[in-house]
Length: 278
Image (tube, rainbow, N blue to C red; front, side):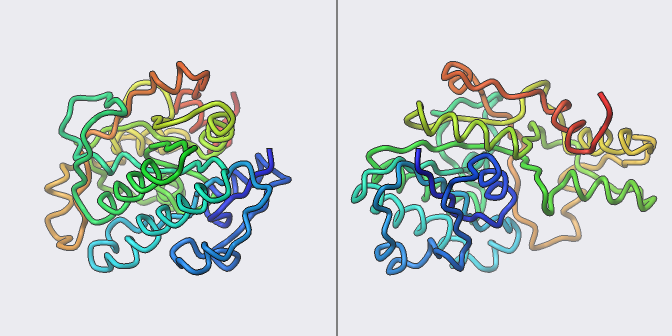
């Protein structure tokens, strides 16, 4: 399988590059997916699969800079889908649970109606639709609460725990963390055997953001009680530009499991991420 990884300098892109050392790894400087002319001019000859890990992920900033979010998250996948139709490669596109409004009781299956709450989710939903309509061979993977070797919630909580900070964290949004080595492995597996839309996250019991923070604090030698639970409304009260988040981010993993994808429990992933002896 000759692979190409786009967005290779992001958390997921780096994990995919590590999992596929022979892949062509392209950062934005190598190929800006939001540039129609650049994608159209790029020679994908001989490429079997393209992993689209390029994304605009600044959820709050997207509310005030929608054009930037739509350029990468919606137009980029559309341009790549056209290239997939031309060159015949499988397009593996990574999406998010933010395409849902989080009001459906979880775990949410793949056919849950798209109902994004904000600009980020809307741009990702548009990207999904473009891939599904334009790429004859495609895999769309929705994931949630991703943590890798860059800025993310788990890393932030670990830093706050080490620094002696006692943060306030929302306890009325639930989901399951996903660690990028596990996600990258699932994407590679689905690239070879999958087709259509899949949900891939860490497995195990759903948890709130507050619960994740408490688990991180405990693993860092702090009392989980040092993390104060607040509601989303309380947290957002003095943050007028905060994007709305889905209350339920729990995705149904049944279809991925049926395709042979076995995701580790998120608590095991957290242990590995934080280097906790097992």
